[in-house]
Image (cartoon, rainbow, N blue to C red; front, side, top):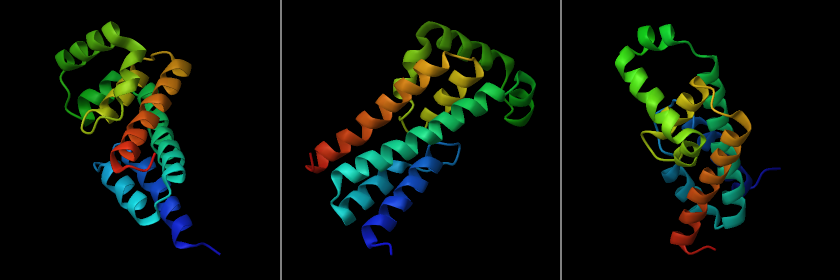
Length: 145
C-alpha cells in the first residue's frame, strides 16, 4: 500500500514535526536524507514545511500556556534572563517568528512568542513563511527547484 516514497514522506512529516518541538535534533539532516532518497522536491517541501510548521505552532501554544514560576523552577531560568528575553520580544515581536527555523534557538523563539502572547495569527503565518523558505533554500542548494 505504501511505497518507499510515501513512507519517506510520512517519516519526514513526523521527524520535522518533532524537531520543531523541544526535542533536540535537526530536521535539516532528515530533510536532506528524504530529499535525496525520493528526489521529490515538491513533496518534501510541502511535507517538511507542514510538519515543521505544525511542530512550531504546538511549541508556540505550549509557551502560551506557560507560567513564569514553571520556567524558573523547571528550567532553572533566572528572572533576569526572562526579563531580557521579554525586552527582546518587545523590540522585535512577531517578526522573530521568521527565525524559528534556526537550529538551537528556533524552539526557544517559538515558545517565547507564545509565552509573551505575541499575536497568534501573525505569529503562525510568519512561522509558516520561515519554515517554507528554509526548506525551499535546501531544495535550491540541492538543485531540485
